Length: 242
Ligand SMILES: *Cc1c(COP(=O)(O)O)cnc(C)c1O
Image (tube, rainbow, N blue to C red):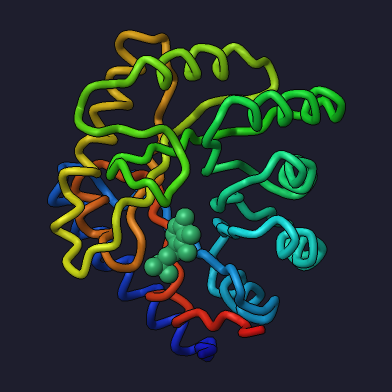
């Protein structure tokens, strides 16, 4: 399903209104939270419509799709953030075409990115993906509760020592929930993980990338600084069937 530009305009206004109210409920302001447009599977025309409506923050999930859309983003003076699972062999696409990586999920990819960034003399802002729902099917460092696992802390030290990666945030995609409220516990856990890293590990985490169409209001109440919205903004996705 493709939304018209008028529908998208209405969607943006509705999301920003709810986002602002949630920020205020959480003791913050609208300026503390950014709306990211997730445009995976959507055509370039949708990206151009979003840009005309003032959107500057975009997220894409698939490296090959990012490579295909890169010139369209560049023509708008933009680069998307990568928010999907990244295989090492696709790391070059992220380094060449993305503004940031929200889904850094293991050390060996960080090493590969460091090498590629060093060659190009660029610094890549990175978010560590936290699997706060401890789900087998998802990537990222696993958290069973509020304790920080040793493997995560070791990887955090190793990754923050890489000169061409800058760990500015944490990202999560919690279990799908019909009712956003169900995920409050996970969003609150993210805030505590960030606080621990900043207080005890020399971290400089000032971004929490969390909240999608189904739960962004709760995520913002719990401290999200970037919400990643696809469906509520540009309509449901259609995946090609083979
Ligand atoms: C697809 C996707 C989103 C957007 O989800 P919606 O439910 O369509 O808002 C956000 N984050 C990630 C990591 C995604 O893969």
